[in-house]
Each structure stands twice: as structure tokens, then as C-alpha cells.
Image 1: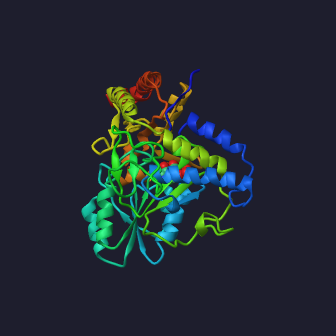
Image 2: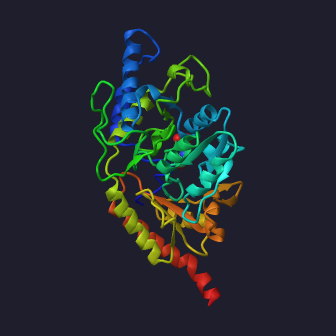
Image 3: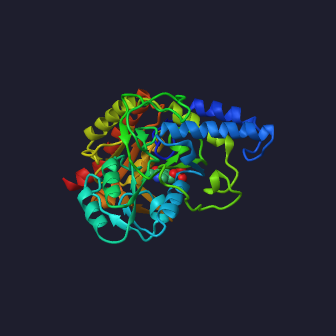
Length: 392
Ligand code: PLP
């Protein structure tokens, strides 16, 4: 059976550019902290990767801290930027933020999954200075938050903004600060080319952004926190040998870092992906599905489809039997399916347990969409017909 992987928001397939960079880096045996030639060779790979990533995302190399992934980047941001501040988080944030900011105040979202900026403004007007955590794009629904507007609001109220860009980076062009000009390094060297004009230019204006390698086609086990230049002297979450300028202890995973940078540079125009996603969506809607968050700006690769009357886990299994990998908009633990906090925050009620997430990877094809459409139609027919006949 041919497999059709449509679960990119869980993890993207490894890009060939990342694989090549990793294979080359594997031959370097030095530790980047060592002073000898092997150490210097390792350090060069790491610093080239740091520079490429920082430039790609509109920051300075010295402001990029390598972490073990998006979860640690979020945790470091909350730990370091949240010191002495109250913490506000969007209602649909990923568990990486929810767990790191356990006592946070929640900024509600509307039925479209977006925060209401006037509510955020009201929350910022009272109380001590805040750290606001807002995701760029939601992992379950793909909705894109108004982070640039939120950043302006935060800055005018003396608040800091951390943006979890894990799902948006690579699919949208994310630029931390400063507009326009092609990405150049301090030395004026262009690294990785400029953003594709077909992609969305997004000036987050944030104080920090979290990135994750495996969400943009790199390996797992590495990510980064990119800080705005004015954010200095942050307290580490993991102490150790003073690596990452004292901001994150531990020997950096050189091979993974090389793959991370190569993947980020390989991310291209996502417009073709949006066309495929739209085709998959149309096919599901024709079978009775409802597209969640359809009225909001969304990631080009993501659709969240609710099929009234059909349990999400049953849908996932039915599609899996046809070789289609998607995921439920619900977390399954101890045999119980818990409706996702994201869909509940959007006020979906019972539909929250009937939604699946289809997220196209960078290498998705028309054949994947055709297979999905055929399988979805069979499944919808099977799962809905008893309900329809019972209701009739
Ligand atoms: N933030 C968001 C929005 C995510 O979707 C994820 C992972 O799914 C994370 C953070 C955590 O990233 P990682 O898997 O690299 O720890």
C-alpha cells in the first residue's frame, strides 16, 4: 500500500538538503568548544549555521540560542523573559507554552481562533509589566495570529512579546524585526537568498521567537530561541559549561544544527502547497465536512476538518487503514479522547471531538491529495450513513 503522509505539523519529512548537510557534519569529530583544529572546524559549521538561521529569520547571529527543540525554546523564553513579570498567553497556545507558564492569565480567542487585540490591550492596561506569549500559527487549525499588531501593543504598554513561531517558520517568511532589505549578515554577505515574493512577509516585532528544526524539514532534537537585540543577559534554563554565551549549557548537537540551517534555507514558496490544501479541503467539504477556522488567515499547508457525527479517532484510524496519515484535533491519553483545548477555546462544543488535522508536508503531491479525497469520501459515507438513517 502506498503511504500518504499528511501530518507535517507533527513532523516534516527530512529535506534532502538537510540530509546532505548532516552527513557532511558527521565527519567532523571536534567539539565546537575545543581550541584545536578539529574543534575550530566544528565551531565553523555551527557558527555558519547560526548565521544562516539568524539572517533567515531577521535577527543577529549573536542573538540566536540553540536549544533541543521548540519546547525548550518556549520554556527558555518564559523563564528568561518572564522574570518579574506577569505572564499572559493566548488560549490556543501549544502545551510547550501552557506548561512553561502554568499560572498565566489567558487571552481568549474568538470563533475564528484569533485573539481580540482590544481584549489584550485592556489586559495590558492594568497590573505589573507583562510577558505576552502568542503563537504565530496554530498547530491544530493553522490560524495565524496578528503578532505584528500584538507586538506594537505590547511595546506601547512596556510588555515583552514572545512568539512561538514553530509552525509558521518555513511556511511563512518570519522576520523578527526590521523590514524590506535582503537578508545580509553583519559582514554584508547574503546568506540563503531573500524571501520568496510569493511568501508572506511577516514582521513580528517580537522580543523573541521560538523555532523548531523538525517542523521545517530538518532533524528532530534541535531548535532555537532568537532574541531581539535589546534582550540581553538572559538567565539560562539549563546551566553547564557556558555554551551559547552562557545562555544554554551543554555541547551543541553539531550534526542536527547543520541540518536545521540547511532545511531553513531550503524552505521555499508555499503557494503550490496552498493549492493542494485547498483541493483536499474542497473534497472533504463535498462530503459534509466543516473547515474549522476558515475565516481566519491560515497556514498554507493546514486544514482542520470536522465531520459532524463522526469521532475524530475513528476517522484517523479509517484513513490510516488506507495509508493516509493525519491526526486528530484531540489528544488521546489512557484510552480516553480529550477534546483539544484549541477547539474548545474556539467554542466548537461537540464538534471539537469530531475534527481531524490534515497538514501537508513540503513534498506533498497531487497523488497524496487524490488518495486523501477518495479515502475521505469512503470514510464519510461509512461513518455518517448509520447516523443519517437513524436521524431520518
Ligand atoms: N510550539 C508549537 C506551536 C508546536 O506545534 C510544537 C510541536 O508540535 C512545539 C511548540 C514544540 O516543538 P518541539 O517538538 O520542537 O519541541
